Image (cartoon, rainbow, N blue to C red):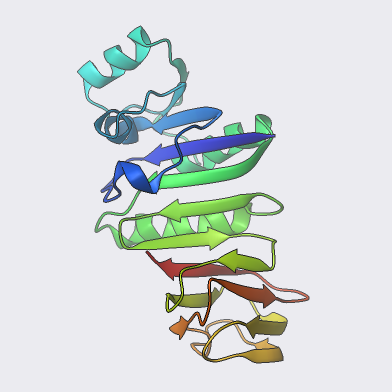
Length: 206
């Protein structure tokens, strides 16, 4: 099972100390390769149609031995979808996403929905400077005391329970689009979240 870092094109606000010291594989997705070098990380593979990567960065990645996975700009999948597919082929168990923030709302929302659709058993973290978006099957999460967090329902959620927070709930039905589970606060160094069915992501203030 692999721990994989994927760097997307678009804005990237994170700092190096927010990331782990090692990953089994590091993917630079088109112009997202630029962020890897700024964070002193070296790509194992660069992926995309290469319409946004600087030529010098691409040459540097080639010199560093990165594998190239090139696709036509007329493809019917985004670079993120392709990168996630390659991560799955490499038996990814943990996937960290950086970059892809930007001001283009269609790309931003598409990235969020792509991660939600892709997620099954893997743990996925999309890290920005201010927030971390988590897709996970586990039912407890380590947070600092008094951390602000939200649960964003991406479908109807059945029997949702939240423990260790200022506003706890037990076995409640949370409909898709509900704001009931936004802006909660952790009371200790961990929270417990459980549901029998439904998709959601956890958004944590860093």
